[in-house]
Length: 110
Image (tube, rainbow, N blue to C red; front, side, top):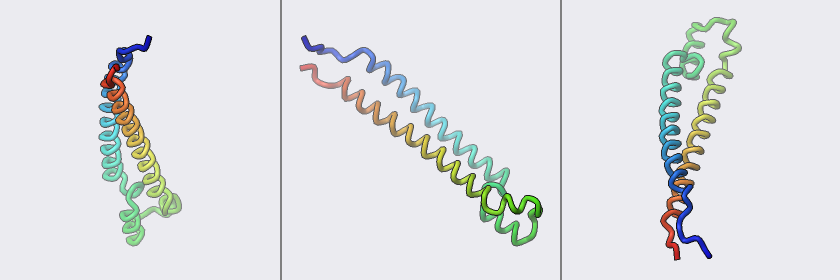
C-alpha cells in the first residue's frame, strides 16, 4: 500500500535549486561589483570618510551639503546591507531545501 519509490518531483526540484544557487551566487557577484563601482565612481554618496575629508577642505557645494551630510552614506550602507542580507537568506534557504530533498531522495524505502 505504501509507495516505496521516491516522488518524481524531487530530482526536478534539485535541478531547479542548483540553477537557483548559481543565479544567487551570480547576484552576489553583481552586488559586489555594483558596490565597488558606486564607491569608486561616487565617493561622496557612498564613503562617509571621503565626505568628511571633503567637508574639512570646504570642497563640497553648499547646496548639496545638507543632503550629503549624513543621509547619503547612511542610506547607501543600509540598502547595500539589506540587499546582501536578502541574497544570503535566499541562498541559505536554497541550500537547506536541497539538503532536505536529497535526504528524502536517499531515504530507505522499507
